[in-house]
Length: 163
Image (cartoon, rainbow, N blue to C red; front, side, top):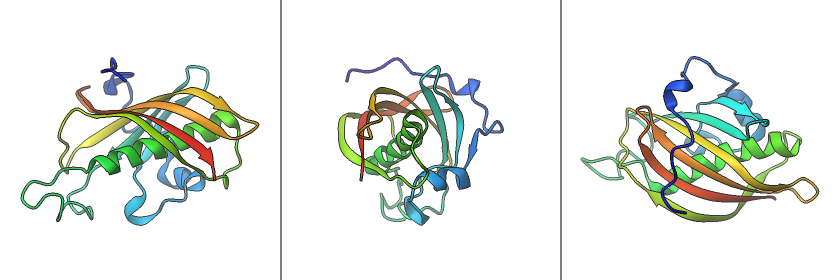
């Protein structure tokens, strides 16, 4: 995956216009506690094939103390997990899956980290489904994480399968 143009302008998705709360996200994704990587879904349109999620990085997150001491950076593996959680919610809607169906990682491709990310920022996660199969629940999703000013933080292609 080359550097994509950004999929959205975060200014078009204000944080006070929530489409799906964290509790609603949790009905579709089983991650809890430290591994819950979403605060909300701001936008979901099957017609436009676009989802936009939100993640606030807090100063008290489990990774801040050790990654890296004196210079905390949001780990790349958690950036990928954040995109995967948004992708799973998108796939649930697109494939019309029951809330209790767990969509897990099948593959992660073309990951690129573009900017350092420290605690105390809001992130927008945007993506679109490239391919999906309802008969054998599967999807391939292209996503990005952005800062509020539109700078691209990271990008990846996530493949999900029903587990």
